[in-house]
Length: 257
Image 1 (cartoon, rainbow, N blue to C red):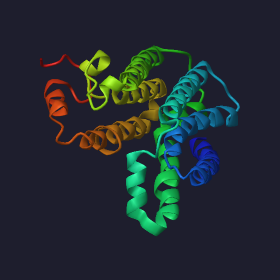
Image 2 (image 1 turned 135 degrees about the vertical axis):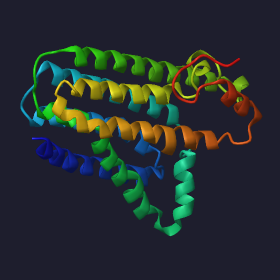
Image 3 (image 1 turned 60 degrees about the vertical axis):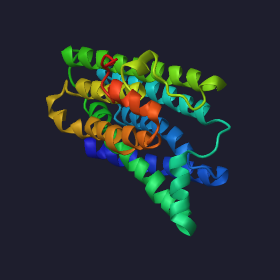
């Protein structure tokens, strides 16, 4: 059942990311890939729920959590990027790839992102492939952790947008609100939500191996596209260096001040 669901999702996501690639070519802006991320995983959740013809409380719960997350994230990124130029990461890659940027964008941005959507979604695909048992302790623990993560991601994003909307804050570092306890509350929240979904999946102990999903997203946020990449942007900034000394990078904790 899992492999069948994975195959169906792979086909759906292939056409989905190809559509967003065509849109990116038309707009000449690969930043639309960021919007596609949440929507793509949301589509995977809905597809697996419908394809397997069952809708247990656990399957409905995990699908609802993913849909709620996906819509919120896609809407936030759309509003954040609206009217702005292409993100510095994609612009840098476009310049590096030169005349091959169209092909490499399709492979390394969109097709690769589609594959990673599937990987991160392993707990969701597994849960929606096997309807097992009634609600239990794993469901409650996972949902609670998801709510904590959603709070940190949503409130963190909102606080940062309000901070950046004020012209008087241009060039300054956000150090208040949730950003006082972690330099990346939104990334911490994202990771926590996926660990919450994994814990729900553990209601079926045979699903233990789907841990590759939350492990990958956490590693990516810490070492690849999240904390590490963003903080390179502030290299040499004295205000940010002080902020780094006083504030936890990822897991929320009290300031050292």
